[in-house]
Image (tube, rainbow, N blue to C red; front, side, top):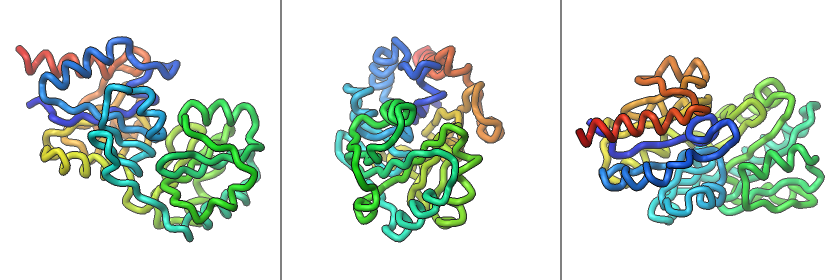
Length: 265
């Protein structure tokens, strides 16, 4: 049975190796709507970034599930407790390895203006609305929905344990080789999919999700049909119902066409 709600991770999943959308994504999106299927970009990326990437879409799961949007309305934006923000930032300050902290509010990402060129380039890929500030400490009481940390030498290697010790009750997601994100307890893409499904009155059995990395684990675990990419982390492949061709071959598009062709045949 054709899923009615399909969540699409971005990096390593829908996007190719250069971070580009499939050239025919607009056509497949139109076809989905004609079949009554809602495609939802589901990413650790900022909402403003996703809206720029998908100007004709109005439904998003952003910031690894911290922000859920439907019909261009924010359905939920879950903030971290201030005490957790302070504890996480304090823990990151003890890390010797070079890293850059991004404090994310629903609308803007705040980064210290001393970030080096490599970090700035990496941050600019994922955050379109950025303010470069003199003092992140002055923002610790703001409505922070996510703390992202970039470490070129490896996010899991250098950042995971200090944060796990500082804020063990919250969600610490390894979002990539060089990225790690901290969200409030219970916040992840899987819970965001539940929120979206309930809003659209879609049974979870009629949902599907594509993903490739550890921050997609809950998303695939909760979806009615879990689809891991060929290039996915082994832990995702273990829980997948299907394996799609790699993102470098636009594997998401291949599977979507197969699903839609089957429905129309």
